[in-house]
Amino acid sequence: MNDQYTEITRLAGGLAHEIKNPLSTIRLNIELLSEDLELIDSPQSRRAQQRIKVVQSECRRLESLLDDFLRFTKADNPELVPGNVNDEIREVIEFFRPKAVELHIEVIAYLASDLPTVLIDRGLFHQALINLLLNALQAMPAGGQLMISTRAGGNEIIIDLIDTGVGMDEKTLANLYAAFYSTKKVGSGLGLATTQKIIKSHGGNISVQSEPNCGTKFTIMLPSLPRLAEK
Ligand SMILES: Nc1ncnc2c1ncn2[C@@H]1O[C@H](COP(=O)(O)OP(=O)(O)O)[C@@H](O)[C@H]1O
Ligand SMILES: [Mg+2]
Image (cartoon, rainbow, N blue to C red; front, side, top):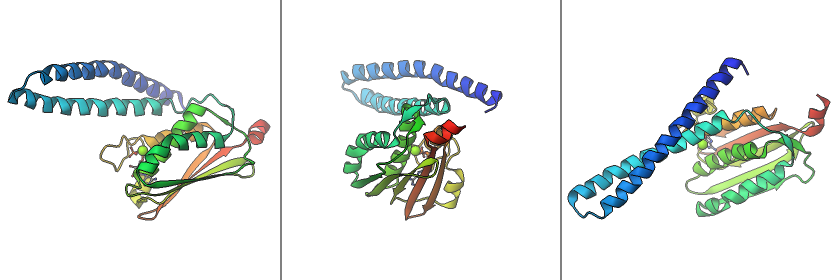
């Protein structure tokens, strides 16, 4: 990666961080203001409460955007240690299970028992998976199936994530890894940009196949340890 890009990312990350602090002060004070107003029962006070709700929700939206952006800027600096991808996948699935049950989504995992060790940054790898699972869940508002499988390739391990959700059209497929590209009302559009950055910084690759109204399949390839050792 070139120095200029690294410098701009560092600056943007610094700016995002600087905005976060005053923003959380604003949100906290608005909350206190709202509590004070609750003690006054008048039409003016009720109107003010409505406006406060808008400010609060916009503050939360900005905070979540800044968090997503900070995660994006930190995505290509992994601290790699030997690990087993199956363990990480199991953990992330357990994290999502309650939400999946609530949405009537069946999560099926086929995890190969002979999976070779890979070098991963656990935190970043979790983030990459979380972004993919979150998208899959959001693509199946009326329920469906999410299948996650792992297998060993030659010098790599392969992870497939298949959902039976809404799928993607050509335009979305052409843009989905671009930062800030989103087809959602409240999406930051940073999820897949972050995931791709994380997978590439692990020496891996991510690809996608999708059909509108049929579903989507993401495939992640990560180099396994013997190949890294030969380098
Ligand atoms: N599993 C999926 N099924 C259907 N569309 C998807 C899926 N994953 C991603 N997308 C599309 O890719 C876009 C970009 O995804 P992402 O970068 O995570 O941003 P966001 O989720 O904030 O919109 C989404 O808005 C959506 O249109
Ligand atoms: Mg997303």
